[in-house]
Length: 54
Image (cartoon, rainbow, N blue to C red; front, side, top):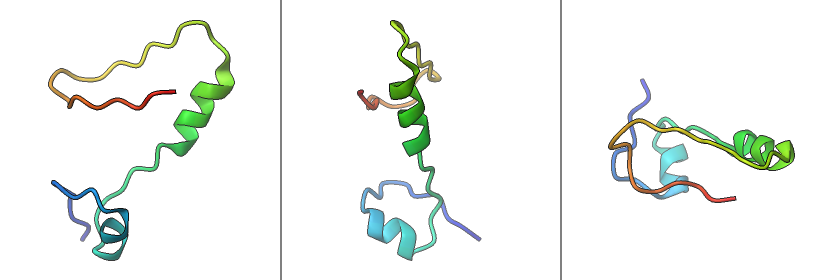
């Protein structure tokens, strides 16, 4: 059974220790290729302070 990676930021450890990993590369590519003037990305309250920037 896969584990949740709480407090782990090392990609190699995520893969080797069988943690869950969500690859958002295709989402970022889709946002870049969309060419909209405004992009609204919602997130739940208290979901963390870091957002990816394009």
